[in-house]
Length: 353
Image (tube, rainbow, N blue to C red):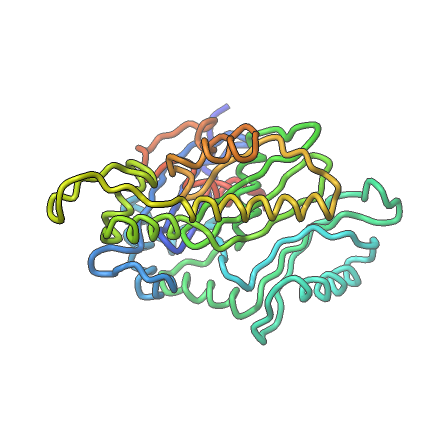
């Protein structure tokens, strides 16, 4: 079967970098026409823990699409992510209602799960099916965002002539990417760890179990800060060393004296593990399910050398780093970064409307 001309674009604007993929789609077959990542921080724009300014993001998006030889305004099916503290995704149990009544009920439910900023609430929901234990109820996946966060995202994109066909949230985009190419186990859950710059999203997926996602404030920037504080490095140096050698490199600092310098502790890595453990314990308490069959690493921090071994030892479970391109035909080069960094962008591009 020949590939058609249906082209979809997934755009993931993070706190550290901008990622994008351009796919040609035919049924459930995909060709990667373009993929690329561009950092938001450089010598002229030093890293800021509060995140990049809007004036930084637009030129990076334009440069990325220019490298694809594509004009954003001509892209008919571009999907993007809204990433903001005023965003939430949650599975709830509800009584089945008529569509209008269900929408009203979901709006009330959404306001319980996101920090309000005074603006209205945007919601979407999907009925997942009948509840396995309560015959008169259904499982509902609800996604909510404050209107202010949603409109700020659209305003940012409009500055570079982008009109997104779909706006999604990161946990669902990552889950969609993984589920498109992997079967869930008959028993137990897969733990998706999306290690971003400022946070890690922990998403639990099971064939029979409740969908759950939680964000923790430990991410790639936390690991970089550990290297900066432990070795006296600049941000760019620490980022490069983290990617090449991990958190415990052997460095000779000839400018400041002889000898090896080693990081004194792994407090950040331990804190990372503690937050994951706290999340899993909460899930066990709420649902009674305690079998976590596998950990899957995605996101920019998934390439950290220590993570797979650390997680395997701490949780005694299999750990893998997800490659969303493993079952695709890749026309373009590697595009920079590592495959797991593109998980959310791929999830956006392969999602059916």
